[in-house]
Amino acid sequence: MTTVLDRPRRSAEPTPGSKARRRYGERASIAYLFLSPWAAGMVLLTLGPMVWLLYLSFTDYDLFTEPEWVGFDNYVRMLTVDPHFWNAVGATSKFVLISVPVQLVAALGVALLINRRSRAQGFYRSAFYAPSLLGASVSVALVWRVIFHDWIGQPDRALLALVLLAVWQFGAPMVIFLAGLQQIPQEYYDAAAVDGAGPWRSFLRITIPMLSPVIFFNLVLDTIRAFQVFTGAYVVSNGTGGPSDSTLFYTLYLYEKGFVEFKMGYASAMSWFLLVVIALITALLFRTARGWVFYSGDDS
Amino acid sequence: MSRLRHAAVLVLLAPLLYPIAWLFLASFKPPAEIVQSLALLPREYILDNYRALAGEIAGVHAWQFFLNSTLVAGACAIANIASCSLAAYAFARLRFRLRTPFFAFTLATIMLPVHIVTIPQYSLFQRFEMVDSFWPLILPKLLATDAFFIFLMVQFMRTIPRELDEAARLDGCGSIRIFGKVVLPLVRPALVTTGIFTFIWTWNDFFSQLIYLSSPEKLTLPLALRLFIDTTDYNAFGPMLALSALAIVPILLFFAAFQRLLVEGFATSGLKG
Picture (cartoon, each protein chain N blue to C red):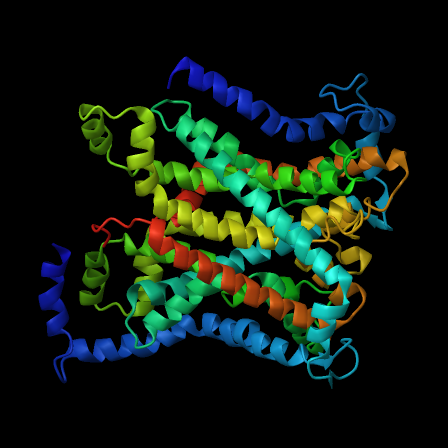
């Protein structure tokens, strides 16, 4: 309906010499005025730094003297010599592979649980969401350090404590699941019930396919979020990533190399490696999405 | 919702909210009891942990950390509201040739981890002699680098009927006045959501503050709390938990006041993409 209304107005606009056209001209240039802070940020704080990061990754740089070109040295050392680098990759992979699925299953389970008409629903939703707002704080990480103090001395348990801290924040994907569930038309379930489908069958045949775009969205964002966890690992291991590198998350090792040892060239190579890995994983997820994510045709 | 469901929810909520409740109650325990037991209720209530905060930490009064955190988080919130609403208006309402690629690019940067650009940004701020000041924390927000909020506001602006813009335009308003007089008042919920989320996320943010701030009088709350990590002295556990508890009070207050707006603002961000 809106397209029918829009069309005549749009075709009237660019008439040569008309007032409307001058207005359009004003709009095009004024758009860049509105965008100027964003554009400055994009060039100075995102794109420029990424190019410069690539250059720095081929240098020896300690922040205080000028960077010195060393070719592929940092990358070679990182990939073939430094055992801590692979420990960091291992700890981070373990953390991502365990925490993301567990968190998403918990989030979907609770969303299904409270997706019923009730006056308490709003309260429940907020109560489950609250840990997501607090989980990144040093306060909560310190609580974890005290509560799990028996665990943080043992490699496997220490990582498990951090996984629990991540899973504890399942409220964020949960509220997104809940909003997605509430958009599935009730008629689908009614029709399935008429056809004799039980709750499990309608969950598999209606809920999961209808929710698949939201599942995908949460999966991508949670995976990327999990790669960036820093505070918990820093606080629980006192900045060391120990015991025996079990909590040496990639970001923590990056911080150590760059801002404790001031090996900025090496840390830059690590940053680029992280960027490439995250881009590859995202691309892979998008590729598999074609097989299982179902987009209904009525999206505008 | 059936009784069984209510019961299941409460069974799940209890362990989930336990760490927060424990933090507040344990902050009234004597330090020896904090490490000995994970019980919720103190055997003995004391105020010593809070009294200890009246003194100095690293030679600075505790209120200074609160002031610094408030200053940084408040400035970031205002900066984000201003810069992201400007960009969002251009993306949602104005027509220009590069709109689609620019917007796609902005969305892609939502997925870019901050750690990746940290080193070159640090080096840049170092050249401008801004390290150990609040500027490296605030400037990125002034330049609309938080693409998530641009996206949130664009989603919100798209729900405003275009007829309102057009009517104002016929009355002789230009884009700037339409933005100020028509669009901004109508997207107030999105602006408030952006402000509060930015405040809370900045308040909690540890990584950037750890990198940029070092002088004791410039430390924020997360950095003041970090000073307690090194301690092996059990007596420091009391004040540590007291300061931890105080540090999350503002978040809980914001959440209590705006929970609906925050939860819904966050939930809808995932749907319309």
